[in-house]
Length: 181
Picture 1 (cartoon, rainbow, N blue to C red):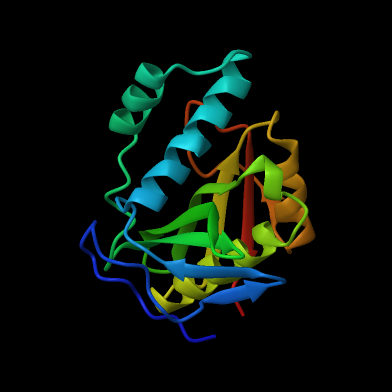
Picture 2 (tube, one colour):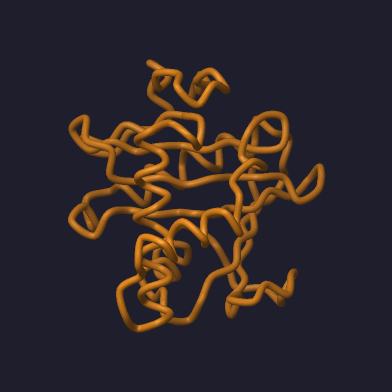
């Protein structure tokens, strides 16, 4: 897989080369602050916060959550952010960042509910794993919550195995790892 990165400028257009495709999905690296990436990060936060609180998150809560959890580690040389488009429509995103020289961490993996089951999750994981290899990682880790059952099933289907806790994140309840061959 050949991955071309978009410029690190938040206003840069997405990269033109496809990082991963599945069905009609195209996943490319893109700065986390482009308009498409920002909209997807907001949708991700709205969903995970809303599921946790068992009520919709307000715009102010989404703003606060994004301020409290900045994505600035998701740029070279420590990480990358990708946007997935289904037939050209941005409907998925995810990030990868280095925890140490051999270990990368998945974060903010999101597929719009209307596009789940169409191969977007698999396309995201393939692109993010390739980005992790590009960063020099030998393994990928992640943490997630018990209520995010779709995410846990996706990771298990794609070779991620549950491991003991590697962090003490406030919302972390399950930890996964996959070696990169």
